[in-house]
Length: 101
Image (cartoon, rainbow, N blue to C red):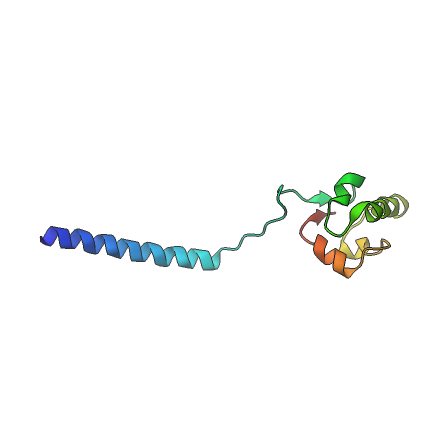
């Protein structure tokens, strides 16, 4: 009987400790999901089709991005991308974490 109580106590104790550890890990761990495919779109080399798939971009803005980079050179940050006609702060915010330069 004492061994059964000991085993039950150990199981309960282990379960509580495991649960506390899992909660602490959950609170301290954050995951940033880039996109469903897991890759960033490089705005300096992406095709029209790749750019058009970005949120808020579409065909016209994708072509404007390509035209702008051909005329003015590489983009280095979101501020530079906002120089493209039709790409404002709202669209730039949607693109954050989905593109690279």
